[in-house]
Amino acid sequence: MSIQLIPEALRARFRFDERNHATAILAADFPRELTDLLDCLAAFTLKRSEIIVSGGGRSLIPIAIDGFLVQRGWAEKKFNIEITADGQQIPIPTHKIDNFKNRIGIEVEWNNKTEFYDRDLNNFRLLNGLSVLSDSGA
Picture 1 (cartoon, helix red, strand yellow):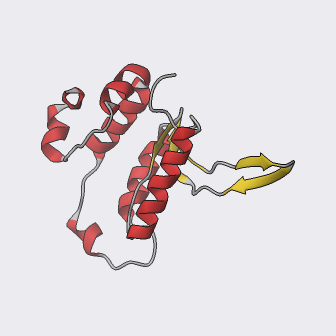
Picture 2 (cartoon, rainbow, N blue to C red; picture 1 turned 180 degrees about the vertical axis):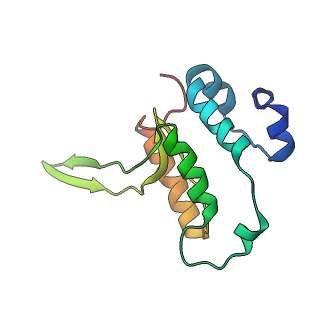
């Protein structure tokens, strides 16, 4: 199982679930991006004080994760997608991805509700189907 490619120290601290051999794909085709993600997790500490603080905006948790990844060249990304029907351009709205680099997208959730979770998953499915987000090194 390719999840064994994740260092044991991280597997002891976090729960990892894998779909479609994602870790093996990252290790083989996107090793720098995988290193960024693993380094980010290794540097991350979940503090009780950051969990219990009242809402009202992005918490220190996603700010820290996004900040780490920005230093490694990741950036927020919104894609403009259109289709043409009978000569008419029809925009296909997508939601921005929190962190994007080299066809890899990371969404950092900080106060998610079911409808936003569904929206984000559908956005990732659409972008993957258009080969904007990778599921292989192709």
